[in-house]
Structure formats: C-alpha cells, structure tokens
Length: 113
Image (cartoon, rainbow, N blue to C red; front, side, top):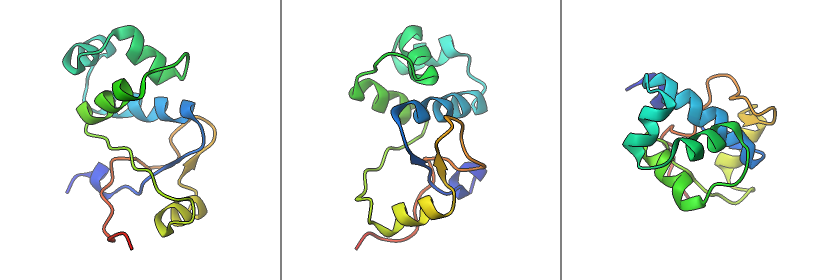
C-alpha cells in the first residue's frame, strides 16, 4: 500500500482548498503543469486556475483532473461518521494548504450505513 493510500481523507471548507491538493498530487507524480494538462486533456490555463483557486472550473473538468491524478471526490452528509471524524481530527483545510498528511485519495475502510 502506498503512503497516499494510508492517508486520511481531507474535508474541504471551500472550493479553493482543492487546488493545493491537486498541485501536491501532480508534483508527487513529477509532472509539470503543462505535461499534466496534456495528459489529462485539459488546458494549462484550467490546471492553473484549479491549482490556484482562481476563476471557475467546470465540475466535469475538475473531476477529470482528479481522476487522471488518481484522486476521488466523495460527497457525504455532514453528519456522516467519516465527515465528523475528519473534521474533529483536524483533517480540514481552511488555509488553502493541505493539512498534515491528509489526502482525498485515501480509500475508506468502513462501509457506509
């Protein structure tokens, strides 16, 4: 199992919190922004806007970038145990920077109720 597969999920507080996670994942794969954009079928401008939290990015494009980088987006009710646990453990990113070693790519072990 890789280090990123062991990391807990991160709870995003705003759309701009996603960018640093995308950048961290791209860099961990030793990809320049232009190379990643080409491989993922998006523009360098889109990658830059997503990573910097500037402007707007269509959800389908953001999901394509996440998928291409091996990340996943989960939507849970705020009262779900995973969301509460992540929030209480400090796994949220309210500064725009990834907190600790958290990553949204972590597989969750429990099964939903």
